[in-house]
Length: 418
Image (cartoon, rainbow, N blue to C red; front, side, top):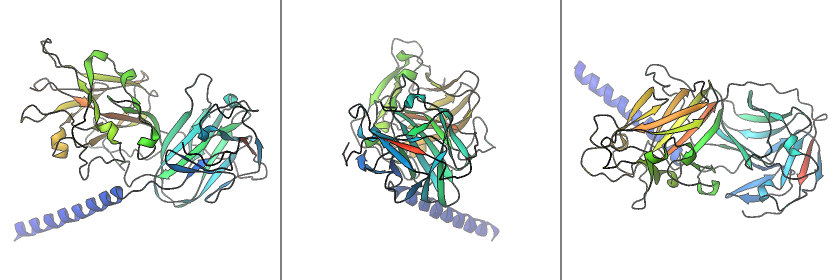
């Protein structure tokens, strides 16, 4: 009787788990990119960019600005894309207030393009605060920077209502060209994950904002926002590869990506990421093909990072023996990667999430390679994202809409499809 009761309870718990899991997946799979907030700063015009309508902040309806405005004309309107034809300048502490913010994890992007104007935007140095954290501290766009400069964050909101994004000039001014602030799919960033090399402790990557440091399409080319479900940009990995001869690019053209319930989705990364990979460059002339492919990514020293690694087995299987290899960070932490065990099929993407602390080198080394006793000397990688946990807290000055000031610079451009 006790054995029967145990099985009955276990079955009930399993069904409850399946119901809970399916509910979570349903919420994630039913996600649609929200229409707000996409803000065209310093302009009265709204236009389409990467399929989204950016609303001019001269006539806001779902957000407010902290003070009055002055306008000036962009001296060279042909020097940038339409999203960067205008900017909002802040001469004193000021803010955007978003009216309807729900609980959840938000993607936050700030666009900066210091075009020619009456104000020298390259001289701007400022802080940006939101939800009690300093997202950017003493930030400036230096001469010689690759333009535009885009800074991206994930911000967890626990209280619904209004949210202010503060701009605090540290010298004469601050500025921004565009702001994106939108809710991501449900459980897009996990609440708790196992930190590096520790199977008993758990850390929350959303205990503070996440600043995106690297988003890499391994084995592929640049991916622009209009080809990504969350309007992200991905860059190739070649500049970070430690040994160029250790890997070759692999591209799948045979079959579509097979998304499995409970694993990676099209919101985690676009098909372009999962259809390309770096593959171990094995050779019959080598007596031993047991080596690693390694990448070195520049990161902040002695900081905590959330690392998301993307895998999709687009490598044709040559036998019934399943592929297995190791993923390691800094060479002293490893986890086994078994694609078929994770998904139950080929060409099905999945994620590995890790919290890891960087060392004093200023680089994070990520490696993949086969075990020494493996018959199949194959390993591959499709994508890498590295995000730094922002620990800097900050407090905004008391609101004073009469004292704050900001400027519009740029021409008023009508709706243009980019």
